[in-house]
Length: 171
Image 1 (tube, rainbow, N blue to C red):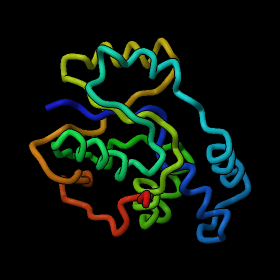
Image 2 (image 1 turned 180 degrees about the vertical axis):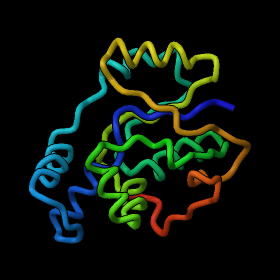
Image 3 (image 1 turned 30 degrees about the horizontal axis):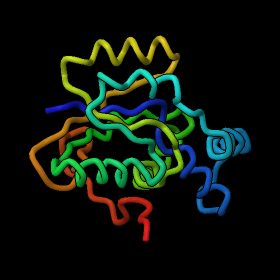
């Protein structure tokens, strides 16, 4: 029943790697923005310091949203449902995903965002929003913790979306 939250926006770093490897056609302005998000992520230290007492679990998103949420689910023995239409994207990532719907998988599984992924009880929503505002860090509720199993990702119509590669896998 806990809610799932992320800070900032998701997917820019992974899209930067696609663009750098000529697997994504973007203009120079988009390329520069994506590259800056890859090379100079914004550490969410201030927000992270405010999460004790609010969050029930937290980690940074380094292996990709899907993989890192999978880590939380595995460690807790619980499942999750994420509404993909709620995952926050930069205007650049949003434009790219509209033009290239196949990039959604890269956005959700690509990693290197270094945003915070955390869970919290429903009654902490206002406190989380205040923490985000006081640290000038956008926070977005993207789903909820469920009974058990791997994380499920749902499109805007509630239909399940499956990814071939859930994200970076350590040895």
